Length: 428
Ligand code: SDX
Image (tube, rainbow, N blue to C red; front, top):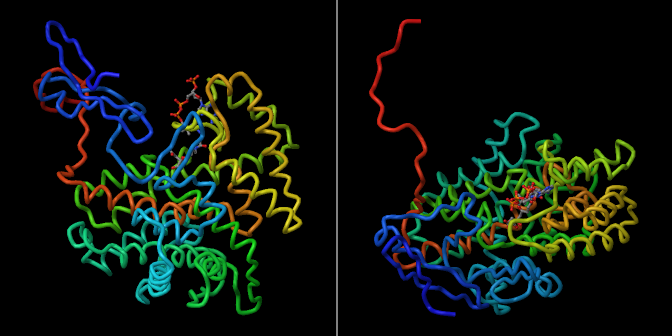
């Protein structure tokens, strides 16, 4: 293929360079298009637009491939840990034993929140969605740790990355404890990342929480497969906000807010309410499938479809297997899993879904595991945020370290009124 694309406009021909990625994917570089031709491109939702080059995550949506820094996600899910994968994403290499140890020590050091922040939780109305609490608390870190602008972080990001990855667990668990009126449980220095989180969530002075290594491993695997996903909505939000040189805490807070949308990370909670609704109404999945196909109905099959994957999301395959393993281990027979599997079976044999390449995505089965572990549905998107934290941090770090990085500022095509004269307010 030629190194240039040619754009013919009237008598003018513009040569636009072709960029080729590691795996051969190609893009037309339009960086100078407007300067040379006066034209811009038009691509609502950016489905055909690359916002950056990146060395972090590779996805092939047709083949169902997902790799972090070149390593397939299923290998990491099987052999790595979430903390090790976080280091890989942020530092572009798997840590040595010493590096892993010092990163873990930083996570322990930063697992405690500033005691003055504890009172913030008293201010939230009971029943506040934990995603709103989380984004507020993460944003508030900017006030407690002010020196985190992009400049001061270009050098050593470890301290701040560890604070974010670690304290987000504490904020999440504290929000949960507050929501059920139980005393908060502090992080411990002697527990692994996920064991500490589970303990903060479920330990109680009257009923000590028994840490089950298989549940810890299942949660660790879930966080690994949520850790990054190239330029999805919330990561793009982090890059756009971060491009204005906003401090990292406020930038990550914006990512959390973007993730909370039901079309994005909020889908895992929406899947559970969809499955619960089906079970409550007698388990008839056909009705839900017909509703999802009805163009007049805004309802969509939650956990199905994806902007990039046009086959089964590789993460959904890993989670589905994990679902079976954990429910078997805990001897739980969850009707939601049966309904989910029947939905998948029917939808993936239905012309409407097949013709649009709609398959289960990461959110379709994840909520069933969280339920089995005891995590309530309104905490499920919080779990997605816990997993995605290292991805947001690594993407932000890559963006601020890019030479000549500019503030994100898309253009538009104006379709409003032509020049109009001002008119003073008319009599009523
Ligand atoms: C995540 O981007 C990422 O990487 C995100 C993520 C990550 O890790 O960060 O993977 C996490 O957000 C996963 C997606 C979770 N969201 C859901 O499960 C919500 C349900 N899914 C859909 O809303 C939808 O599939 C999206 C939002 C995920 C993708 O939407 P697109 O790419 O904009 O697709 P589209 O709206 O252009 O749909 C194409 C067609 C349309 O029908 P036609 O107009 O062609 O007739 O497919 C239909 C849509 O109506 N369609 C669905 C559907 N998803 C798309 N119809 C019914 N049910 C669905 N779920």
